[in-house]
Image 1 (tube, rainbow, N blue to C red):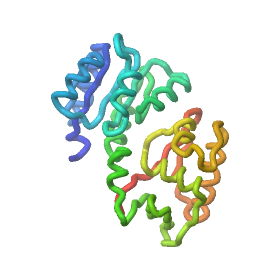
Image 2 (cartoon, rainbow, N blue to C red):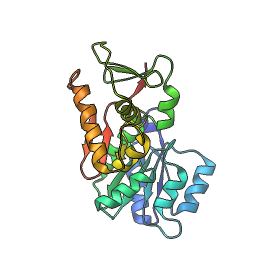
Image 3 (cartoon, rainbow, N blue to C red):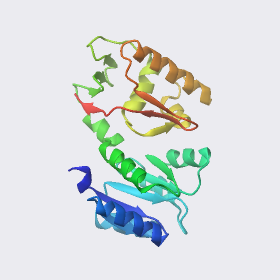
Length: 237
C-alpha cells in the first residue's frame, strides 16, 4: 500500500480545523475520516482500522492525551496537534505515545510532509516482528539485537557495551520516533544508566562517537529540548 492510499482518521472537536485537514489530505489522495471527540474516534476505529491518526490535544470530555495513552501509540502512528507549544507540552505528548507533535496554527504543506514521513516509518511492533535470524539493516549497517552483533557498512564487526547496545536497540525498534530522555532512561534503565537526564545525553554521545568511527552517516538526530530521533529506516536483512 502506498502512503497516498492510506486511511487517516482526524480527531478534533473544532469542525473548521477538522474539515480543513480532511479536505486538504483528501485532495492529496488519502482516504480521510473524521471524528469530533474520543467517543467518535472509538466508533471510527471499531468500524475500520486507520493507518494514521491526527489527534487534537484539547478536546472536551476525554482529551487527546488520555486518548493517545489509551490507544497505546504503538501500532497506529499518532500525530498530535495542539495550541500548546511549550517544550514540556511536547514532551508529555510524546511520552503518552504520540509519534510526532505539531503546534497550531500550522502550514498545511508541513502537515502533509509529516503525514508522509510517518506513514513511511515502520511501527515499533512491526520492527520487532521484522527481526529474524538475519537481523535488521539501517543505512548499510547490520544488527542482530538478540545476539548483540553489529556490523558497519563495510562489514566490520563493531563491539558495543551492554548499555550502548541497549540504547541502540531502543532506537532501532522505534525508527523515526522522537524519544524523550525519560523514555530512553526507562528503556535502558539499569544498564549503564543513572536516573537523570544528563546520563542519556552522555550515553548518546558515546554511542554516536563509536558509530562515527566506522561511518560518518548521522544516525541519531537531536530534537532540541525534547530528546532524540533515530533517522534511518530500519528493514529486515
